[in-house]
Length: 316
Length: 316
Image (cartoon, rainbow over all chains, first blue to last red; front, side, top):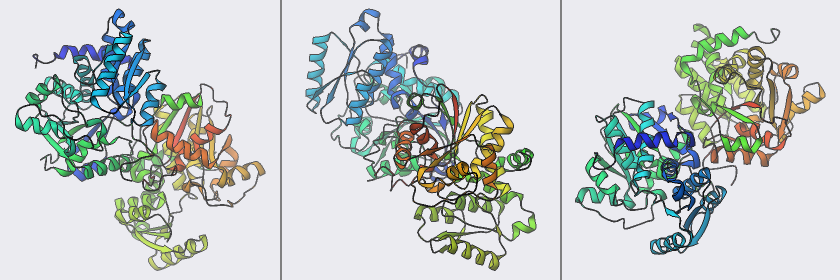
C-alpha cells in the first residue's frame, strides 16, 4: 500500500483535522440486524460537520496548504457535500472558497455553501461547463483547486472515518463503504488494510452508476454511463488516484437497485431513527439484495451523509 | 414529594427494567444551540425500545405484577406508543396483552402492536367507547388494566429517563419534558427534584391541548377541550395521580403553536439528523416561541418518541 498513500499521512490528517470535525458516534439497530442476519455498526458520518464525511477530507486539504497557498483561496466544482464541506473548511481557515455549482443544483445545497461563506458561481449543468468555469475562476482568483476525491489529502482525510470506526469497534469482520468517485472507499481501504488486515472491505454501488463494479470486473477503467441514480453522491466515475487503489485492495463490490436504496434509506429513518441521504443507504441496500454471506458477522458501515431533502423524499 | 411517589420506587423500577430497555444516548447539536441560545442535551427516547419512553413504564408495570396477576394478561386502551410498549413488555414476560384501539388509529400503530404479539380490539373513536370496550375485554379475559399514565408503576418507570439523563449530564440547569397525560412529566419531576433540586423543570404543551397550562394557572383540574393538535401523544388530559404532582412541582409550563411544533420536528430531522414524532418536538418548539431566559444555560430535553409517520410528514 505504500505505493498508494502512506498510512502516516492518514495519522497526520487525523491530528490536523481533529479539532475541526466530530468524532462521530457508532450506532446499532436490532431490527436491522435481524433483517440482514448480521451485527451492523453504523459509523454516523451523517452527523459529521456539514452533514457528511466530506468535512474530513476538505479540512485536511485546506489545513495542509501553506500560508501562501491558503491566502489565494480554494476552489472546486461540486453540486454536493464537498462544496459545503470545502466552504466550511475555508471559512475555518479564514480564506475564500470559490465553488462552481451547476445551475440545477438543489437550492438547499447552494444555500448551505453560501451559509458557510462560500462564493458560488453557477454554470451550465455539464461536466465541460463545470471544468471550464472552475478553470476560469481559478485563473481570475489564483485559488487552489481542491478536487472532491482525486487528491491524496482528500483520501487521507476520508480514511480517518475508518480509523475512528476501528477504535470504536475494533473487532469488525467486514467494513462496507459506498463508492462514487472513490475518495471515501480508497481511504477506507487504506485505513482498514493497515489497521485490521483480517477484515474484508466491500464497496457498495448503485446499479445505475456501476462504473467501479464494471471496471473492477474488466480490470481496466470504465467511465460511468448514466448519472440518474437517486444516490446523487455516487454518480461520478472513479479517478486517476482512486481507481488503482480500489482495483488492488477492494474485496468485493456489491450492487444495489434503486428500489433497495429507497427502502434502505427509509429503514434507516424508520428503524434506526437516523436521517441519511440516499447515497449513505447504499451499503445497507446492497446487503438487502445480495447474498453476502455475513451470517452473524460484525459489519461496519460508513453512513456517509445525512443531507436528505425533507421536501423531496425518495419514497414519494 | 414522599406524599406522591417515593424515589425508592424509581430506583426499584430502574433495576427492574434495565435489561428490557435501552440506556438511550444524549445528543447535542450546535446549530440548534445557536438557534435558541442555550446548550441543549437531548435524551433520545426516540431511540428507546418500541420507539418511545413508554417502554420504561410499561416494562415496570408488567414486571411488577405477581405471577398470578401476570398470568391473567394485561389490557389497556391507547391509540399510540403505550399500546406498542405494553404489547412488547407483555411479550417479554410471556403473557397476553389486550389492546383496545380506536378504529381510526394509524395503520402503522396497529401493525406495531400486532408485531409485538398484542391482541387488538378495535372500537369507535370516542373515549366512552374505548373505556367501555376495555372494561368488556377485561371482564372477558380477567386481564389487569395498565393505564397509560395514571399509575404509580408507570410514573416510576418514566422517571428513569431523567435518572439516566442526570447521570449522563449531571450539571443541567433546566430539564424540559412534554406533557399530555402527565406520566412522563410527573416522573421527570420526581426524579429531577430528588436528584438535582437546583434544576428548574419545565413542561412544554401544545397550545391546542393546553389543559395542563390552564389547570396550573387556575389552580384546579381543567380537562382538555380539543384533541386536534398534531402532537398526537399529548392530546389527553392530566390524570388523578399526575395532576397534583405537576401542580406542586413544575416550575413553569410553556406553550407551543402548531407551526412551531412542525418547525421543531423538521429542525430535529434536518439539523440533529434524528427522527422524532411531533410530540417529542414540543419542548424545542416551546423554546423557539418563548422568552424562557435560558441564555447559555444547560438544558436537558426529553425527546419522547420517534414514531413519525414517514408517509404523512407534518410539513406536507
